[in-house]
Length: 461
Image (cartoon, rainbow, N blue to C red; front, side):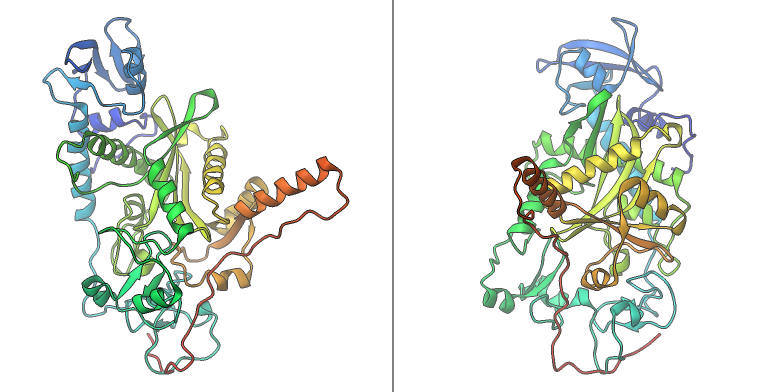
């Protein structure tokens, strides 16, 4: 893990396996059919697999296709000469990656449990502390004018319906309250029942409504699928998969885990090449692997459990990477996007962003926001069609846990409703109607509901 990737190295799963020493150069690799007969064989090189039958260097996908197999599950049917499946090599390498990354995860200081940075802007200063979690905020970032008295709870710790605190410990033990697995809003069980909402859930998942159900199902069904674009490019939605399959013989789960986690491990090298180190001073948490592997944290500001990664590839080479998190249909955030230095100035970032926007529109997500440093705001606004987030929109999003960077500028781009409006306008023009086009741009966001009789006193740091 200590060895850095050079800019000239190809960002492929095969080169990653070589980099970690799990497979060796010039090692024999075979493509086998269901009867375990060898269909094609070749030698592992840094640039791909040198096929013995045609003396051509091919990617893993190309080698499988050359052997007459499909591309949906690239490593099924690929074996080393020692009979070890390539999938097992990927899982072995991922295990080493996971342990090395986790070993560097920071720890919370038990003597000083509260956060030192604002959960909204990420900056320091005079902060108001939540009495339920370690989060802290600037009063101005909460859009408050008066210092609250008594016990006070941050928006992430309150029930969306009644505004009172949700006790997470009670929720995990007795299901007295619930947290939506997609938008992460919290609810009391009694409030849910009073509203007539469903409380059916699987052991690990509860979704607060039809919209979140559609987004969650849509994302889950897309994980690991290769989406073909023109000129040989493709994009894939990834999410870190941990745990073991419920059925011991579930080869699909094992293969999906190997493919997703391996590509994530490759993609993270591009972010580390393009960004300075992002280590939180309070906890020592390295934010890049925390986001890429969607790891959680006791600090809401550093809790990245809902993140997905989208990669742009060609010939199995990861070219461009973006991290996204979707908060129901209200908003999606895109805090990190990068292109390998070797492939910049080719329009790849735009191709990736366009693919992400189309996916979000299909999921009916209303708005995409980015957190941009001032030096690149013009690039986002003039090049990608974003515009500054207005104050009332910031307030409407104040209960959503967004990844924050001190000194950055929030930018927005309307998606789903805007697409509907454009379609209606096109129809209006084509039909020659004299009426104004129907449809209204919806402003997204949950309004923070609060109890009217809460106490007002607060501890500061």
